[in-house]
Length: 497
Image (tube, rainbow, N blue to C red):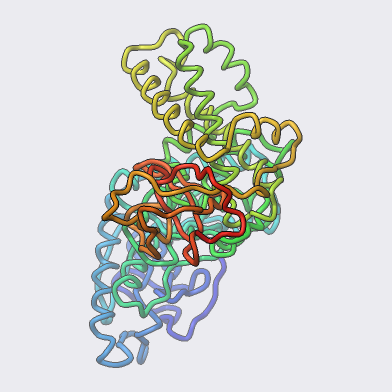
């Protein structure tokens, strides 16, 4: 491990009970310092992490940590509490691929976490030597980490700072996940005085606003997907904030074509979706798609066809079409000027969706027969997909035009404007226009119940409540539920209402 000195670090030879400090490990961060130390009782090396938030604390003399002023005392104590709680949580895990905490104690006005010392190098250093990894090398690292992540997620814990520098490769090439960021996140959320854990390229969009309610397993999945993207391309993905308007990221399925299995590439692209709703929601769900033999999908479809009912096949076909349509137009916000890339992304999503439906609708691993519960699930998906497809078709995004676009390998359909009028709104009510898709988002305007010539902007989102579409009316631009719009028969060109 890289050894560096730091002005706030304990000096070499300093004693913390039976532990003797040898050096600083890695680069000290804004939250604390990690040391290489020797357990003088057991005569073995350990890693010791010291709570020392540099934003509002400093070491005076050889040992004692003080807050910089009394105004920081509450923040320091809150952080100390979070640090202790994180140590207690990590101590409960005994997984080979998760850093092991063996002891915790308070001393010198602060606290310390004693962990196993791992000999090896960080993934950052390894990638500097290798630049890119083969699929076998990548899976050797990622699959064990997924097992560890799954265990901590089931316990309600998130890592929140997965990146190459926090993945350590032991001398035997087995990986271990280090430096959990949950305590730092909690401090940043409460005090706003410690920089939030946002590593550009690895932090998903929801981590930029410090809203814990939007974070979950999908947050760690995005970060690990970014690590995998780095491992196959030699560079990290663009920061999530750069990807919002016009996404400069080349999809993994394109940049890694011919060198990696399609299932692996599709899984990486799935993990790197900007919206948390569009990502895998659990490690298990993501791992199933990652390890699927996507190159054999056509053969599997043929085997499954002998046992699936026609209604299930039709349901999958509709869902695939919906996925392609949704991806094609739903990403118009940030890749509108790169239509060919948008269509390619839609096709990738469609392939990923069929893998999902195969796994959820098959009866057993050998495709022998469909049990009643699977049949009901598939039929319910078919009904839902049918309804959504009909709703999408109301906005003149028909199957024929989409198929023509795919056949021609170039997107069309953005040039002709489409107009709608208000429907299903009582004369005494109004139609609210939301800033983003969904009833929980801010209202940016209102449309009267007799509103006409509402311009559809060719962008929509699927939410639990149905289909939302983006529109423009007078000087208002935002989102409304499709239930309240009906095709406008009259000529609206040149009119604002």
